[in-house]
Length: 534
Image 1 (spheres, rainbow, N blue to C red):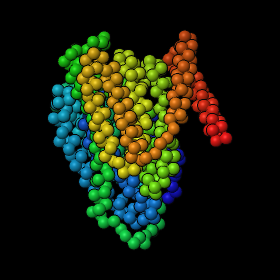
Image 2: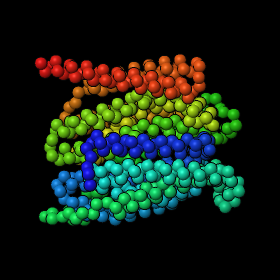
Image 3: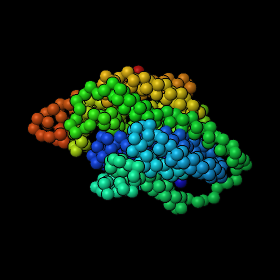
Image 4: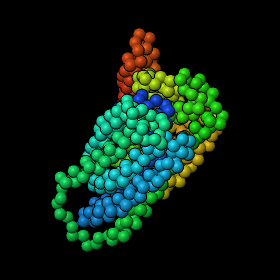
């Protein structure tokens, strides 16, 4: 099994994540156009309960397996790796089954609490099996990642995306066109949009099943060369305890991350319901539906675009984890510093121009992607702009969290995320009554800014390393120039053409200026270093 270094492994994962996110957009955008703001509130309700359970049982699992596998691989203990893999599969298959059952049991009460009518109960129930499938998939991905092979994770993500698009959109479209006819089989549902949302969720569950099957097929054809000869094999009980010890704080931290979705659901709907909505009410939306309309629009449109880039840079964390863990175990501070700079700088180079571009082109992007939902898109333009600083912070936080886990500080992200969630909750309560969806966006950016600051402080203190901030200032400066070029390109082109042409012109102008600026700035930095050495 050929290993990849940090850059190669991260590039593989980022390309696959970009492909998966494109497929996710192909799924989510037409789905939003099919369901509308209220329908997306049912869809988001199911995700709000699913994500914390899924994150707790799955997110930390792949990291724990990868870290333990990487350490055993560095020592040549391949038989021990097999024992880690088998123990993890057995342990977390049980965890996944319990998680799926928990979601099924909570489907009705959670739906009643969140929507007040229980309309989302079927959507919540439909997503429950994904936890079980996800746990098995996470073990296999963690095994291959720990061995330094990112291809299985990459291809399985793409496979999931393809199945989600095909199955989810077809099922949602089919049910949406026959909602009244099918509702007689579900007497507890009175809104056809809730039934269509459940059909879309079924596509998500089928995609997680497809990812598990894909990795099972990969395993059939993987290298089965016999290794062994270790003088010592870790006891299964010790492996299980280490897996739990490592994955629990990571999973708990991910739960806290996903609790922001529940915070948004509770505070946006609750605050607008109590204090009213100060913005213009779209025609055709009943007054009673306004809280769900605003919430569904914000989560279905603004947050969908917001999450495009972080889902790609998240792969940097997976790529850097084995490198940081190996360097930390070997006590190689120079390699640790090099890996840290690579991960943070790569995140910044991707996130900064993306945030600037999305902020400038928010009207064009939303009108192009959500052409059939003009009211929802209009509501989210300024909210999307307020989200952009938080997007940069979130992109970089993923890498810092992975590095903290690599140096054995798995509990730190949990504590940091708890502080961030508190900031998010207080921010929503303060800003949503006065700013609506914009207030939720402001509090989100504040949340992730606090998280990034605390995580960087904790990591550098624990790792006992320092890095120069100069390259990061260069990225920010290049991003400003990129934004100016994009704005001018869009402004000039929009006078003679439509949104699509203006967006293309802005991307081309901004991209060229950004790349040239980074190149010129990097040359200047190198010359300064040479001068200093002389």
